[in-house]
Amino acid sequence: QVQLVESGGGLVQTGDSLRLSCAASGRTFNIYRMGWFRQAPGKEREFVAAISWSLGGTNYADSVKGRFTISRDNAKNTVYLQMNSLKPEDTAVYYCAGSPRTFSSASSEQHYDYWGQGTQVTVSS
Image (tube, rainbow, N blue to C red; front, side, top):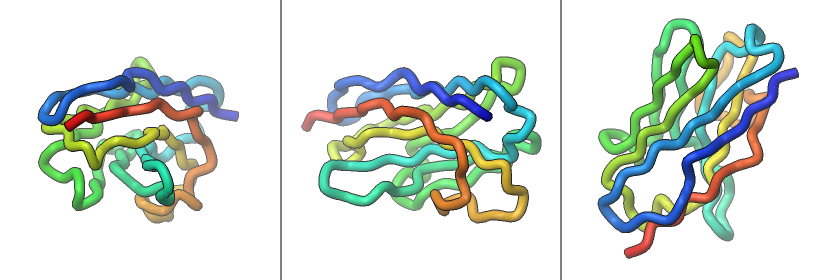
């Protein structure tokens, strides 16, 4: 099994930056891809960004391109989400997820087997 623990959420103002972290433990050698998803109140969970654990290839939702950056530190088994120029519409619970599937969609939550507990990000206007 793989355990994921997010940290770094909080309350910020429009235009501010925030960095989320996701620490993985357990059978991390199973992980092919790590992703970030978010869920705003009253909305379905949506894809934010993903990164290949070994090669480092990235994918982003159109809504965050140019503002958010996903990265990883393999030595620390940690994935980061650097969020810049935050907007009120970025307010959500952010979830870290891990996928063991090599042939899968980076943006489909159904392809992720491992999930963290979520961290709240609130952007005030």
